[in-house]
Length: 88
Image (cartoon, rainbow, N blue to C red; front, side, top):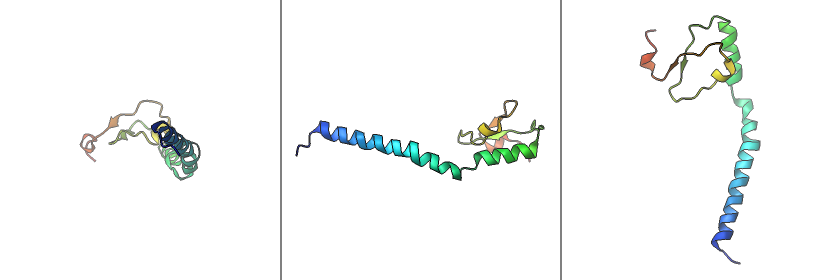
């Protein structure tokens, strides 16, 4: 049996490809049932109604999260530090 670099590289590429295929085609869609972004966004919009002018987004890590599902009518102000949010 020959263990040439080309054969080892090809085998590793096939393993990497099949791993990514499994993760993105099967594993990630199966975890969508456990994500709460869409129901959370729906609950927020039902609670706020049309009057969401006081709404802002706090994203310390740059992740939009449920904002995508909220579909606000205007751009929301973004804050990345708690000190910039203002007094409570």
